[in-house]
Length: 283
Image 1: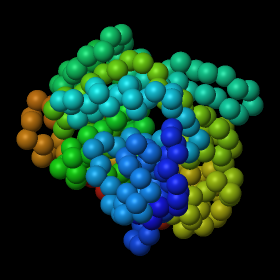
Image 2: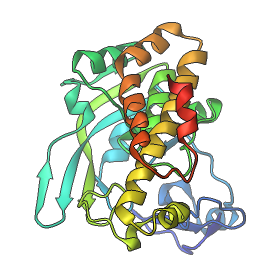
Image 3: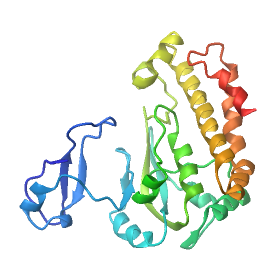
């Protein structure tokens, strides 16, 4: 890391650029001013000691006290899971109070383990799960499990979140809203349903060409390719994970949703990624 900020100011964030190998194209990193005693500390700083990791999409925002409230609750757990609100900003601006945490109907702070999490999903008839930015994660935990987001798929937070929660020792449920998720036009999740050549991602340009630059078909095909890839990873995990009770609950609770959507790839006449041949592994 190379510091861009030259002076330390109270109640500010210190800005760093990343030099050298940067495959994920992370342009800026921020650290609290409290981490440095003086400008010399700042100049000498090159490599961070990371305790926890939290994700924030560039369109979204936190409550100001998000970090301060959540870090003390990380004691003895691998994940703190907090609540979120959707901020819709397409034709009209409004807030929508909907989230998976609300769906499991926990009203008070508590700790749960993976089995309790899966039983809550089942009891509340929740058939899928995703997690990325709605909490804080112990950094040593994801390093130990070698967890990362799968590249070049749609809805990568589903696979990541399921594997994250399934392998955690404990999860702290904090049913308080700290995250505002902005729904806007031309986002990756395509909330406005307007698919154009301009919002086709670079890594499936070849798919776009294979579908004769039909953006709607290309993006739909890519979505179902992603469900196939996600299903294959989940099946591998379920078959090989040492805790067979967790594996069984995963299979009974949410695996069907992903496999069902994976098989929708069969409706496409074209298959430029030859993904259909992998469906036999999901039968």
